[in-house]
Length: 182
Picture 1: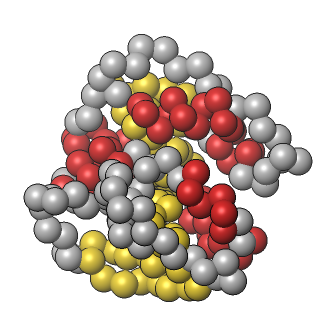
Picture 2: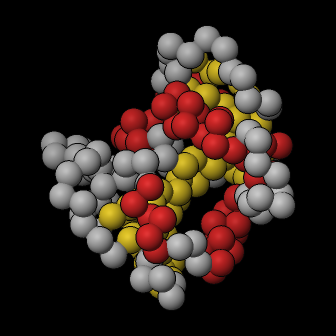
Picture 3: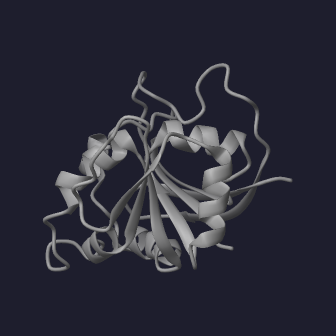
């Protein structure tokens, strides 16, 4: 049985919207090493519909020469959680249907390795509530956005987490790795 690793880019005030606001900070190569640490163990990518529809045009045509992460995103099986998406056009993609905690538990058991999630806030929130997330990897950028979707919105169920790892980068980003407490 593999673990589920969530990766989010987040503003200091918790916004996790499409991270175009990260561009001003550049991408520190050491951040890539950190992300590579959990993607290299992953044998599947789990995505919600919205993130899948954002990632497919952004990643499907990239090569390793364009971005070292391209082979992972293009060659790894992508499992899309959606009750509305009928056709997956990105290679190695499978639609698993609407959110079902038991179906995702079974998928977690079936995949020979870890599952990786990036973005997909609705999916991540539900999986956190159902105890299906093993590690939460947050890359916190040194800016506030004031408004936008947050990983933990007002009224969200409380979660206790244990700090598992930290790292800071030259571009001002701080990495916080958490594991849910039992």
